[in-house]
Length: 366
Image (cartoon, rainbow, N blue to C red):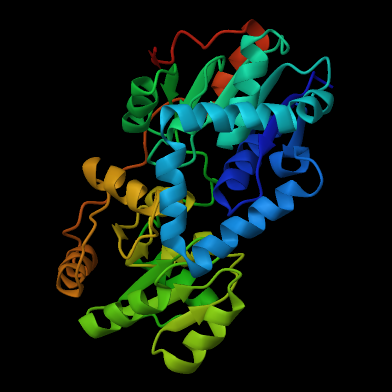
């Protein structure tokens, strides 16, 4: 068995773990050994569990506080302090979790990236380190000195990394291969049959991440009011939201969905609150994507980045939403193509073999 690639993620939402799982799957399919760790487990005395609980509480009860945290954490002195604290809390456990013969280390979570960058820059890690960007918007904590390369899903994201001082390569998004466009209306109808969805309605799938947070009920209500499409709401693990919408809404409501590729293939349009994984999966499925009622903080920042890249409009009112949904279901909305670029596994494989990014990959250097 080959020397392992070690991947650090974080069980906060689904985006970081989703990218880690897909990267691990691709590497293992190529015969590469992989070891995965949750960064939260690297923190002492149950601090990781408390951090996840605090984040969930913020998003559910006072999301504006999360926006404030992100803003403050983006200031250079605060970001440096957060990185230093992460090193003090997690470095020893992370070092112990990395086998001596590891061929590379990868992070999909910003605080883990900061720790690994510090360890690499001080030569406590001899093997290459890569960081994976999981959102359209790049927070300063996502970029760390010492990291050999930042893998960014698309050139606009790689350019953000460059502006923050890190070397970056634009790669294809790390989404499962099941997320791909339908070949025609018959395939979409078959997906709807499998899911018990109406075949002849226009369907707007509403996604709000694995935790089902944000103004989801209001989004469903606004789509219904538009009269253009039937909202199909994915509540994720938010059982309270699921029960509420079942009782009070005209929407078609799902809880946790294991068949997300089919659901996206069944959709005429996806309306999301600007989660990174949700938007990437929808775009890979060839479905028009609309940002709406976005979460404060990273949701709003992601929506702005997607709008700037001209891949997802960001309507602010019900009237604007109605226009965008109409454009989408009539085929007049832009359907962004999947981002071109090398597979992230090719970059990791080259790092493990030679310690450098392959010449075929365009590096946006710091």
